[in-house]
Length: 287
Image (cartoon, rainbow, N blue to C red):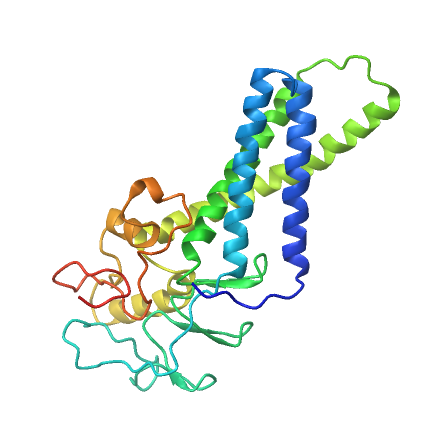
């Protein structure tokens, strides 16, 4: 996979600082205060939370640095290919989709990003929190990062609440003031963050089960549904091939690797299996 260039980003810096704060407050305040880092339960929880934090950081870094997918400069849609029954066209005129800004044809599900200033394969959205587009090659790691991040936030909240049940012993006024500050800041960060990540995860679970992107739901899907209803038909998303099959196209055929940042299964991103295909075809490839 290609890597994209990277410059300073305030939102990315903020995410890194939040991850660091949550990790150190959870391990060295909540766990140590509740279970003690010198005890077996304390060590076990610290090890588990550290592993969770490392997976968050690892997947986040991949989502930030991995190129989301570029359209090959020599790409040309093969309109006579009988195994590619879906050729996306312009909303007006009925011509094949062509990007005037990039000066090339756009493959199915590709869109031009005004921030990145180029077309992105299977573009979902541009995310300021990773300073990158979420597209064909980094969608899975973005999804997995959200899973780990939400799990870590909920885990940290449980440890925070558990540590509040412990009666303070031999704490001077200065230490008590410091701990109160840690708890207040942690609560103000973890509660809204857990809710936001839970909503975001729920949204992308829905998208994955339907094999849709955010753009296809809010922009293309609304128009396609309106056109279908106008013609007396029932609209069906062409890339929806069934919930489990949709998940395997995005997360991989091996369920044991669904929460790993693997992406060998995704294919080129120039062609996608559709409900019209007569035989299974690997995502992004021709049989």
